[in-house]
Every structure is written in structure tokens, then in C-alpha cells.
Image 1 (cartoon, rainbow, N blue to C red):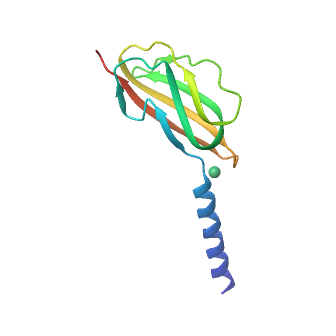
Image 2 (cartoon, protein in one colour; image 1 turned 180 degrees about the vertical axis):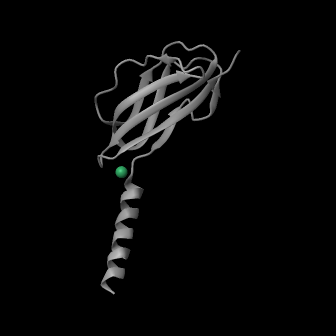
Image 3 (tube, rainbow, N blue to C red; image 1 turned 135 degrees about the horizontal axis):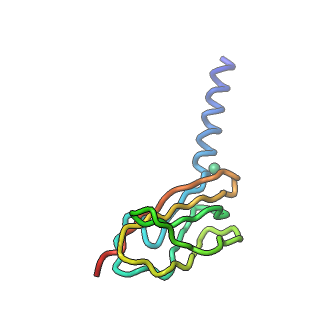
Length: 115
Ligand SMILES: [Cu+2]
């Protein structure tokens, strides 16, 4: 009887933690978007304040593009100046630490179309 109640309690705790987990709530360009021109800014929005700990931008050949220094302040929205990018497929990799100290990471894929 006691063990069942303990299991139920720990399942409830796990789901409460999971629902509080920070996630990427949006980006510009959006994931899987095709844009006509090189974006001047790359924007990332999160469901809670985070500290960005890594950002990388790669094209389909694996070449990397410098995005400058990471923002140092915690925020739920970031705008990062992007270099002029030729048409192609890009992967933006990000990693962040949420307010709950969990590390979250992901990728945003976008294409700059040949005009
Ligand atoms: Cu979390």
C-alpha cells in the first residue's frame, strides 16, 4: 500500500517537473521556414527566462558562421545579429540553461531560397 502511494507521488512529481521544463516557443526564421533573403537578426523565444550557453550556425556542407559573443543576460527572447548568408540550408543549434537549472537544447532548420 505504501509503495503504491510512493510510486504515485513520484510520478506526479516527475510530470510537474516535465511541464515546467523550458522549451523553445518560437524563432525567426521559424523552424523549417524558407526565407527569401538572409535574415539580419536571428530571434529565439523561450517559454521561461534562460541563459544561452551555446549557439552555432552551420550550412549544409558543415561550414560554420560566426554569430558573435553570446548574450550574457538571462531572458526569454533573444535577437542575435546574423552575418550575410548565401542561399542554402542552415541549421541553428542552441543550448540554454533554464531557471530550473536544466540544460535544454535543440535545432532550428531554415532555408534561404535562391532568388
Ligand atoms: Cu527543466
